[in-house]
Image 1 (cartoon, rainbow, N blue to C red):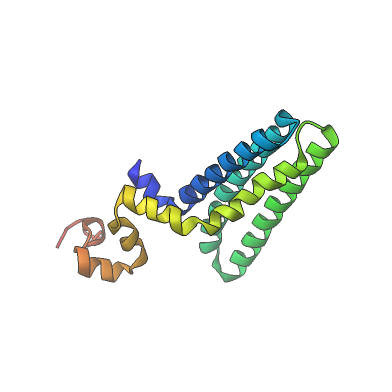
Image 2: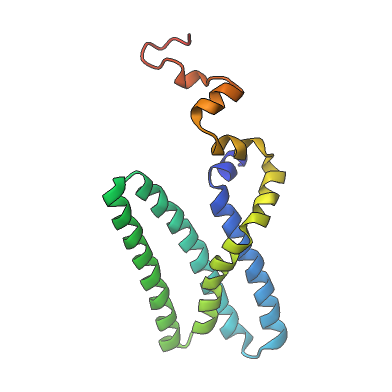
Length: 164
C-alpha cells in the first residue's frame, strides 16, 4: 500500500483534502440548514465528482506527458472540457430532476480546489506516513539518484543480462 501511496501521492493527498472539507461542510449542513437529505445528496454527489475529477486529471496529465508537445495540449484541453461539461450536466440534471441540490453539487466539486490549496499540509502528513526519502527520490534526476543511492540492478546492463 505504501508503494501505491508514493506512486499517486498527489492524488491521494487531494482525496484526503476533499474528504476533510466534505466532512466539515456536511457538519455545517446538518447543523444550520433545513431539507438536510436533499442538500446532503447534492454534497455527496459533488464530493464523488471531485474525487473522480482529481483521478481524471492525474490520468490526463500522465497521458499528456507521453503525447508529445502538440498532442499534450490537445489531450489537456479535451480532458478539461470533458470534466467541465460532465460537472455542468450533473448540476443541470439535479436541478431538473429535483433529486439533489445543484448548489451543493457545485460546493462539493469546489472541494477539489480547496483541497489543492491545503495540499502542502496534507503532503506533510504523507511524509510522516511514508518518510521523506521516497518523495526526495522522486524530485531528483536518475543520475543524482544513482550517485546518492547506488545504481539499480534493472538499469545496469539490460542488453546482455549481466550486472557489471
